Image 1 (cartoon, rainbow, N blue to C red):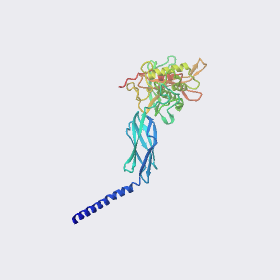
Image 2 (image 1 turned 90 degrees about the vertical axis):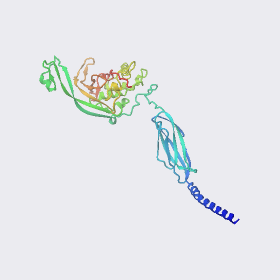
Image 3 (image 1 turned 30 degrees about the horizontal axis):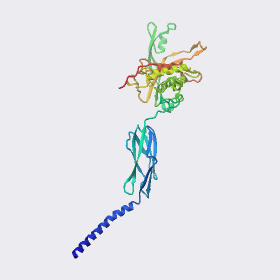
Length: 392
């Protein structure tokens, strides 16, 4: 009997010690649980956003005492959307969700702190991303108004680099106005033995234009300076490159911004009749987007790197070089008006879409001392070129 009591006493003593040992961490945990996450609240649990656009969701963490209010945010498919949580502060975090491509996924928000049960608190945000939405002037069903623009400003989006080059010329001497060997030499030319032709390398000015973006409307085009003879042709090439295939048709041709761009480049006082504008639009539509057949060229055909073989895909940044031709047309009477045609300079460009150089005649206006394209010669810029090859 005494032996049984001793055994029972030992068992009770061991049990008491074990209970005390186990009670210690439980007491500590109970004490720790005085600081915990009480609730995670999201301002939205489902959102819809367009690709390329962003929206914000706020996460609030309600805690007891000094538990963490921070959260972690994870996109469960970063090809569809990305997340960018701001720094957490006093229980609120603004989460920026950006759509990347069309699709659906979830964003998981999880507290850094634990709840009473010792676990983090999580919630999902259902995310639906729509395809890229066309802007004004980009949707054939809603072409919008010319003037939506691209934000182009020549002062920050265009760089001009001037230089010199030699241009070889070979021409027939006018029999009514022959030149001597000495006169030819003064011009850097060599006169043939019979005096009928002259040839040689002539130093000519050049200007290289580099664009980080293109103008989208007339007001943006006007930021391109016309204070040199290169300006109007450079602006004309920029106007051609900003043409949007498939956006305008004969029902809304008058909204095509290139029409007023070229009217402006013709110089002050030169208004283009509506019939002429229709023909302008038909020419651009046929050449640049292949209305009625394959396109005979491309809006980007004048830029470096663009060739028929690569579908007229230019290298970036967008660059082209203009050359002042060695020829000029002197001032001459305009018998139709009784005035004078202005002196014109020839500006040339070489490009892979044609076997010869393309040009515009430009003149300096006496009205404002700016340079403009003479007599609709901007049409040379939308003349047919080699069709783009299909790139497989």
